[in-house]
Amino acid sequence: MKPALDPAFAHARLDSLLDAIPLTRAMQIALRGYDGDTLTLAAPLAPNVNDKGCAFGGSLAGLATLAGWGLVALKLASRNIACDIYVQDSTIRYLAPVWGELSALARLAEGESWDAFLAALAERGRARLRVDCRVPLADGKDACTLDSRFVAIRGAK
Amino acid sequence: MKPALDPAFAHARLDSLLDAIPLTRAMQIALRGYDGDTLTLAAPLAPNVNDKGCAFGGSLAGLATLAGWGLVALKLASRNIACDIYVQDSTIRYLAPVWGELSALARLAEGESWDAFLAALAERGRARLRVDCRVPLADGKDACTLDSRFVAIRGAK
Image (cartoon, rainbow over all chains, first blue to last red; front, top):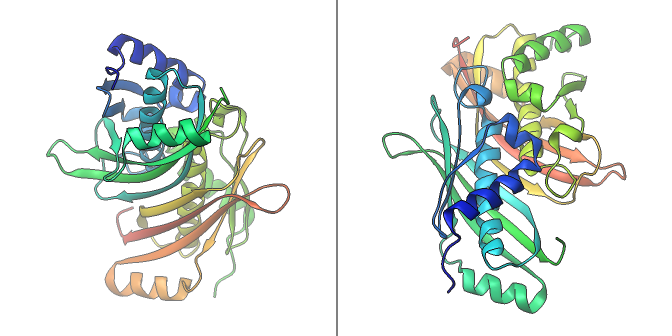
């Protein structure tokens, strides 16, 4: 296994990916952390608030989906593999309102492996994998969980 | 059954609901149609584009979730029932990319009824129901489907 992306490079790489998506600027999404296995994105409440004063469900879904997508994008960037990455489906559960900053932590779903994903991608030019995301509250409980499936298609970019 | 909301009133009511959610302005979401049973929202591609030049998954999820939420909100507004409405869970399937305007049509899921929902709300002060949303393409196929469950809680607003 190669080492994880250098943090400064991960930051620059993700910023350039997010910059191509205007809504991420409106949401003020920022990279909070990346260690090769977990990606954390965050966004302030104000631009993501709903009519009740807590986080808008669409913002939570968007942030968590982007965290999952970014996890796959950074892994492929660290291997210099040019791919388009699409989300295929997601199930999101809204468990508790978020009254402050939004953050989303993405990691591979149980039973998934980067090695298998990268091997499938090398062999067939496309590969799928599931990513689990959670939006934690200050007390450690989850405000929201997102289970998503992504597909990467080689050579598109 | 009372008649559907007057279109001009529906427009004003939904605009005031959406105005409280800053991201809907960033997405430039507009009411396209409402007949009491189906709500259609639309948004231009430019503010909702992704890194590949088609619609960002987070925008599709947000637009479809809002269409479902708005369908419930307008029904309750037409009955003068003050409620907070929350999305509880959603499953979204991304079937094809959207290269132009985004639109989302929301209607009750099969097996759901407004009468049962309103009766439960009157009796228990809260009620749940499922809403189906689709994002159609010009050829009539679906670019995206969203199956969501909402809960309404009386008296909160």
